[in-house]
Length: 176
Image 1 (tube, rainbow, N blue to C red):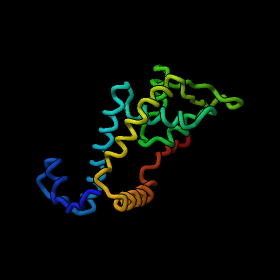
Image 2: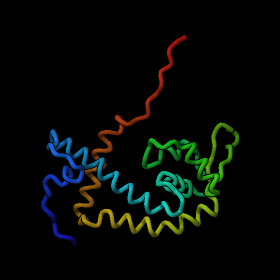
Image 3: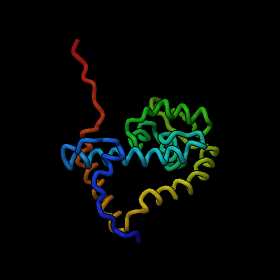
Image 4: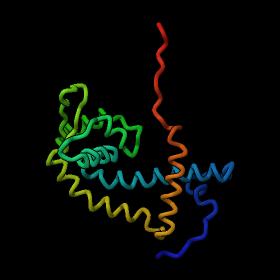
């Protein structure tokens, strides 16, 4: 277990080249959360890049594989994405063009499109899985099991408290 570290005051400020202090601890925490998410996401994106996948494409492909032989609806994939802002149709178009998924219209409701992983998509993921699993371990290796559990709990609290703030906007049409 790594030794506990003391807080390095100002490290985020220095990293970002920021001269003035944060307005508050809460602002510093919010910026640290966003910056950390960006750094970790970039590490995962670089890991899957050699496979000619973006990080959101990898995420969608894993979701499709996880659905099994019954397939999964396009909108369900979007709901399960790590980054909810992803444009799912374009992303799935690229995965289909690469031969990693196939899409079929559902029966009897032909409006619904189901996605299925192809054998090629499954092989690609099987090769990436051990690398992604190793990076999962590496990005949090600095945390003891106790701190890791507390960290997950804190992130859950923040995510739940803010879920409504990032909810999709619904367009209100004006009456004619």
